[in-house]
Image 1 (cartoon, rainbow, N blue to C red):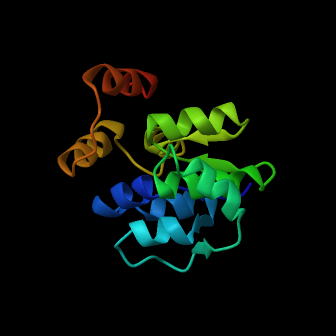
Image 2: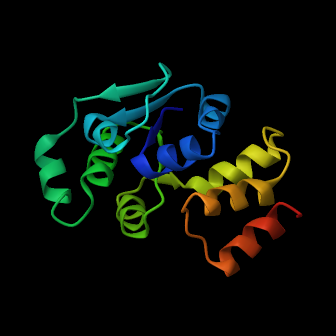
Length: 149
């Protein structure tokens, strides 16, 4: 399954030194050139940057969404059976309404804990929060309950 990501999950994972979780979970991740411009970190070779997507559709979606989100969604709509990693609510809602399969950073944390890639979901969530990732107490509690922590 091809995995396409928006910028914020990559930035957040890089901030806490856990960008490699994406490689361990998925092998390869694809981002658009617009998303690449939003990520200031050096990226490893397993993150592929794509410039070919429907720019007319991108310009249309960009009227209501962040440019990175718009480009990632447009790329995902032309990529059968892909997984889109996106955190922003408005972008996720748009992607889901277009029939896309979406997960976010919390989904990555849950999958990483369930597959043994991280030992503590709480530790990971705490680290993300320390680096500016906003998470409501209710949602954090739900994630930790799902992980049995």
